[in-house]
Image 1 (cartoon, rainbow, N blue to C red):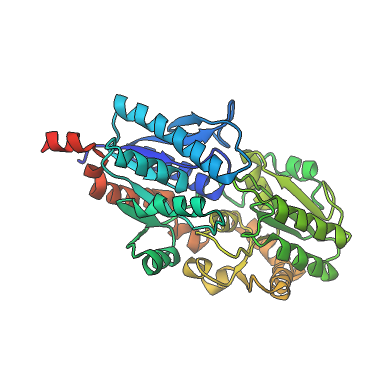
Image 2: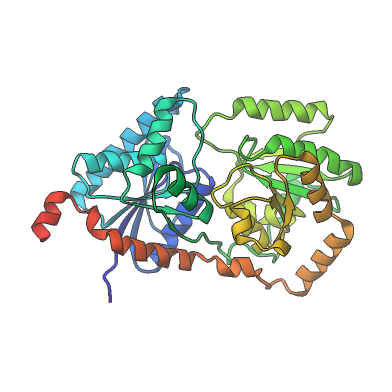
Length: 405
């Protein structure tokens, strides 16, 4: 029986972003397989993770993010380097695995200094940065990795075409114990607290007001939807980010005001910001459709979470969604065309379809969509472990490896 691995997973924050959710879920799945996992993440003074973790967590102290993105990256990479160097001196790890550019750069620095022998990096997606320093750091964070992983075939292909990197595809997962169509005891209270309108179509988007999430076109499509569904509500949840989306968010709010939509609990549009993690399953169940019409995604974890909750989805007709969703498993929209998004939302919120969906959920709440059965965190963890074992020797410092030889 192979011995358990000591695994260091690095993520960029303790906020409920897709990459952080992935890291936490993967960490717990690896821990459940018998491995010893420690998650490293920058944290403000007193900051707690968005949900408790069943494995070790090292919250690396950092100060408030500077206005300059490059300064923030430099500060947080430096903090991760110091924290990891201390831990490696006391208790080495078998595997170092970064989930983003901050962790990737920290591990690249430690490798250059001979503190570790190598590391793995998962690329969920890449961003376009105007600052050449930040763009260079983003590339350094995966080019110097000994193995690169991606959660979609699309990003594997892009890394091969643009950077000559042969990345391994790893599955994403969904926790079917957490995401379910079965009503929970707090569902009704959440509906009242947020002012959700009973009987009115509820469109849910997760990720906040960001250009990558295509929030402005979604808002414009929602305005068109209300011509057919006058009582419809749009809830845009989340939005915690290390990047500055202030200008885009202001444009979205201006568009909401221009269209005369009311904002706030009970209003036409509700911008919740980050919500307690315990609220999210109830909010997903309350929605009639999840809209994820992003312009760019690594995978789109919330799509699986919505489907596992019995909530239909409208997604962009492009990869990565086209990789793992069958035609009948989603409503499809051209993310660049407001009319296409509006049509897909109208089809998803058709009253007859909503009645059929409610009847199906009442009749068999335990039914699990096939796409969710195909994507489990246990399978993801097992795939990771196979890749980790192939790279394990790289985690040792060069002098340790020489001694072992």
